[in-house]
Length: 304
Image (cartoon, rainbow, N blue to C red; front, top):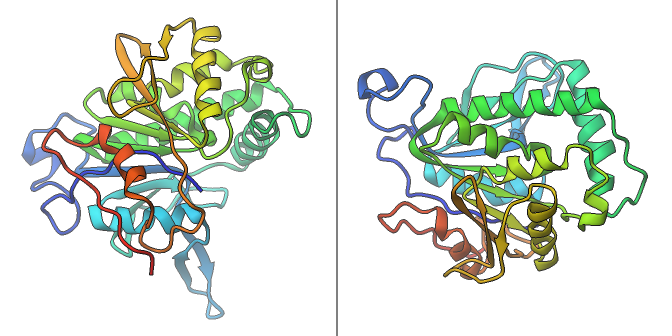
């Protein structure tokens, strides 16, 4: 499992919100109070019905949750994700030191967005067409609609100048959408699967929209150097944007997007991260470009 982005220090209030509400603090309408927001396709908890018929939320298995949960807890941040069932999402709630915000999907959206575009289009395409990808416009339209819903939820939770960390191929449009809604936030994106060579990526009818969506981020992370090279080529070929191999301090490569310089990092974290996001400090250092100017740093902690 791999990661790439940087986290701010925890905000002063115990619940992770800056002092005062959006109304009393004079923030623009639509801004929340969390200085660190994770946006992932799933919430870090699963809804479980007990034998007594009660509903409980229990921690989800998986490397992403194991890696990020202690970080969100330490930052007293928010996590935006899908609860995993079709229907209306539950009201936002607090669990294990995190503020959890569900994004609801209808049964049609589960079919078209999740099972369709994510699993039957992007997954095989990004894995070198291990199976023939399917390209269906209704699936793409569902992908756009759901990504916008995630972006809106993130925008509503993020405090002014917050760091928002978006994860994986299901949400590649979120950085660009969020950038349009909230130009003040710092946005990181990490792709947890390979990024294909351009000859394969060019099969996707909506390749330009994907590239420009990703370039809404300040920092884009990939698992391998080859993925970084593939994405840079996609920037040039699909979006017509200049890129350069000269490496600014702390990054592997960069690309000019809408007058901004978007940096790309390639780092790999060992599969066993443990409960405490244990990983080489060099990987956490790669997150530094998204830190606040005050020099906030995240230190690695030994695995338990």
